[in-house]
Image 1 (spheres, rainbow, N blue to C red):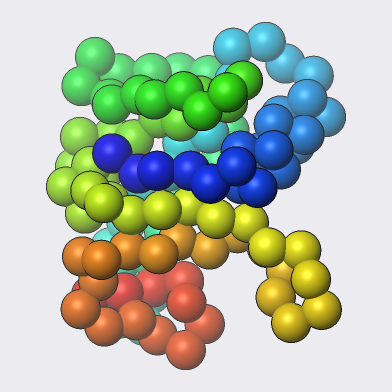
Image 2: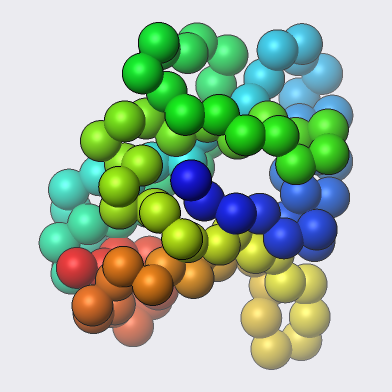
Length: 106
């Protein structure tokens, strides 16, 4: 299961609160595509499967589908808000190679 830093959990919580919809979770997935073979996908979801893996980080619920779980094992979702970097990033020890944009890996 992917880990979530405190900064990322805080930002996700604020974004979820702005959605003003009960029962939302952040779904983190890995999909085929991108310039390196796989790409990350994150979106709010309220529909869950029996084979989803879930974890809670404070008020934030994270959901990962079964096929993505293996590729995200040991990964960490972080959020930065600074002059050099702004936005979410995933540090994934399973990635052997990443592209320049950091959004896809193999």
